Length: 67
View 1 (tube, rainbow, N blue to C red):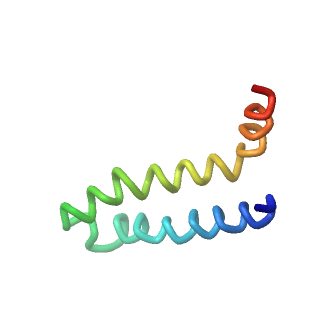
View 2: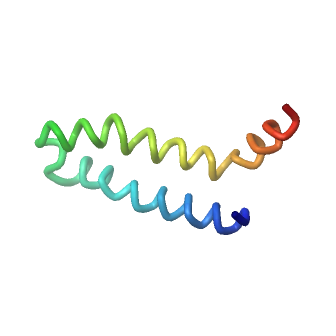
C-alpha cells in the first residue's frame, strides 16, 4: 500500500471515529451505559492511536526497519 493511501485511510478512520466522542460530550450518549463504555474504552483509544500514528508513524516505521 502506498504511504499516501495509508495516510488517507487512517485520517478518515480518525475523523469518523471522532464523531461518537462528540456525541458523548454534547449528546445523550453519556446516559447510556453500553454506549458510554464503548466510547471510553474502544473509540477514544482508537482515535488517540490513529492520531499518534498520523503524527509519528513515520518514525515508528523507520525504527522498525532498523530492527
